[in-house]
Image 1 (cartoon, helix red, strand yellow):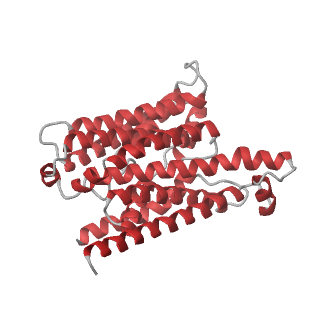
Image 2: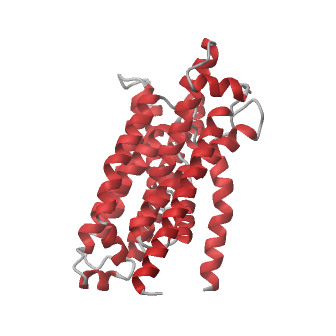
Image 3: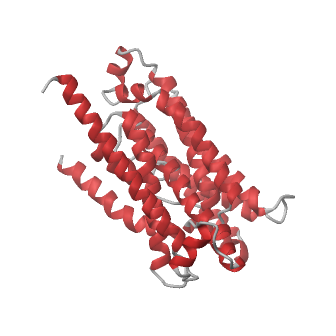
Length: 341
């Protein structure tokens, strides 16, 4: 087989794999809509989605509650999957993600601060808490990116800076919890668990717009990210401005992570697991890896949303706990595999 034929066959395999992942995502999305604590008949739910239902209560539950939750799970999962793939590439570290490097912790601190100041701020919780989370996710990412602008900064140093950022914001978050009233503390803990229950169409639109704007910018730099995987020196030899590329990547990760966690709380390990699964399916070529990470991140969080409704029938289990239960064994497997190597 010639090199061109082999490339075409490999590309067709990657496209077919991505197509199967999208089919699985569609199935998980449908399951997310038809399941819920109300235990509605599946046939009635499908008729309501098709516009043939005549029960106003059914329409309110399915269209106004369940559908925004399913959509939010998809767009948040896609955002976290892409941000994790970018972080692992620019830092050359398989354990890197916005969660493990403190960006999500920064968002958690920002949200907790807004909850604590809720009686002082003139706006409602619907937007002040997301804005606080978004702002401090950017600050956390800026701290790590600032270290990257130092002379002689290496990916290893950036990882250490991210870990320091993680502990800093966790300590500040603990301080806020200590100072909070019982009512504010309950809100903070609920937000930190991660939940899709407050999803709405305007919130889904914000996350979707950020993803739609950032992903094409990242795909434009896909070949540069691929070159960066061969090392900084080789990437520079190919004409890649490594420092500027990392800075753009940090800005993109900040936007994706801030928008993703601003409305649903801290959801861990999606950005760690999804890129690794995508890499095993489509390889290291970033032209395929970034879209596949988005699809698999959406699939993982959508499936976790379904599981969160089935763990305790009649209630919704916090989705952040579900993703952690999936991610912690995977994280341990990555560490042990790296130790064996």
